[in-house]
Amino acid sequence: MAEPVITLRHFFERARAGQLTGVRCRKCGELAIPPKELCPACYERAWEPVPLGGEGTIASYTVIRVAPRAFMADAPYAVAAVKLTEGVSILGRIVDIPLERLAVGLPVRFRPIVRNSQTAIGFGPA
Amino acid sequence: MRRVAVIGVGVTKFGKHERTSSELFAEAAADALADAEISADRVQALYYGNVVGSETEHQLHTGPQAASILGIPAIPTTRFEAACASSHAAFRHAVMEVGAGVSDVVLVGGAERVLNVPTPDSTEYFAYASDAVWEQTLGLTFPGVFALIARAHMQKYGTTEEQMAAVAVKNHKHGALNPKAQFQKEITLEQVLKSAYVADPLKLYDCCPFTDGGAAVVLASEEVARKSRRPVWVLASAAASDWMLLGDKRDLSRVPATERAAALAYKQAGLAPTDVDVVELHDCFTIAEIVATEGLGFFEPGAGARAAEKGMTSLGGRVPVNPSGGLKAKGHPIGATGAAQIAEIVTQLRGDAGSRQVSGARTGLTHTLGGNTATVLVSLFGRG
Ligand SMILES: [Zn+2]
Image 1 (cartoon, helix red, strand yellow):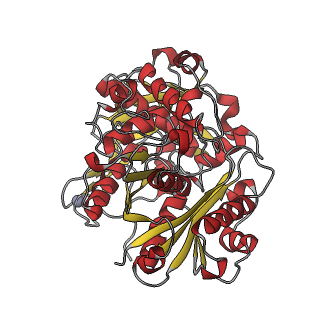
Image 2 (tube, rainbow over the protein chains, first blue to last red; image 1 turned 120 degrees about the vertical axis):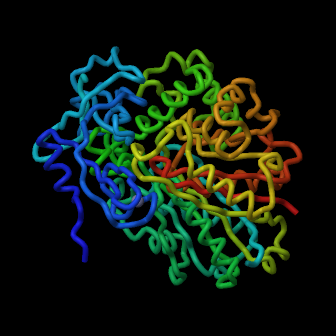
């Protein structure tokens, strides 16, 4: 049995410390985040973890005004799809950017959101 | 594969009910059997869709429960969970069971009950269909998912909030003609545009409602169907998936699973988009209808919004979409939705749709989407 290159637990431990981590395929060079077991480009199992810069731009965003029960106290809040400089995309909660300043193309920077014991992906001002 | 037909359909009134989801299914199923003029003892299997039964009714094992309440406890039952596409996924597997010659008569359907819980709770339960680690932790909701798609479509193609609103106005106009619809009331463009934002740029009237309801269809082999009064033939039933995470999708303005499932279905049936006379598709949000009309090949990517605005998808238009009122006005009891769409297309192809009839419809299409656009089912139907 192969050791996983990076488990979700390790990913979020690193994220909590401020470091976004992707995986790069040693066979074909494909970059992925979050980690997957097989490379979706060549189906090999030859990943290595790579640190990501955490910088990107907003590809799409929304302001959630009707929230699930667990998030009602936070509403309204923004969630964005962020295209990272390295070319991969990930969703994150927007923090410390006024809702009216949000725009497609706005530069943002990764920032972990730690809530109780859970870490979630966040993005703040670049 | 043997030819397969739908020989009976049944749908409950959509809206708020003081009955369990299994009761709602049983009503629809009994109606479908009566419509098929076939005795319940002929049914050899149940393929059943139910999604949030665990959350809203504290109920697992809803397959045998539904069969028991209907009164046919001994047949094999399987519950399908594919988010909002559950009973359409069930349908595809049932078609394969009959097509493969395993059974001659199979019941397919689904039901959902959600209006017995407050909106913040149903909003949370529906969000369980997005990823628990990567998406639910952000407070992402289903309107939020489609808001991200809407913004991407607006950015890429210049789609406007007015064009999205036109879809809501059109589907309410259709729903006003459907006695089973949750909302049988027309709305104006201004009402849509003035409604409150739920997840910008989507407003309340861009969103389908929470709904209780059930739906069922009876499937039969060609031999059984030939003896039935009004069979409608299943010309294709195809499924496709896509990345679970929205972040993994390269272009948020498109739904690749719709494009894949549609290509498979058209190939199975030997048909093209121009052959389709009537469509029931997954308009959980107005933008979802626009993107689906593009993914199904009725309009080029980016042209769906203008087509909706120009009335090309209205009753009487080039390709009438959601004559039932769609999820938007007819309602969206998620486990029942796929089966209810199929019931509407069968009704249309039989010429039984009354004031919402698409005249002369011979070929119909159903499209159901599940979760963060990760599951899509497309089926094609023909009469005669
Ligand atoms: Zn590779």
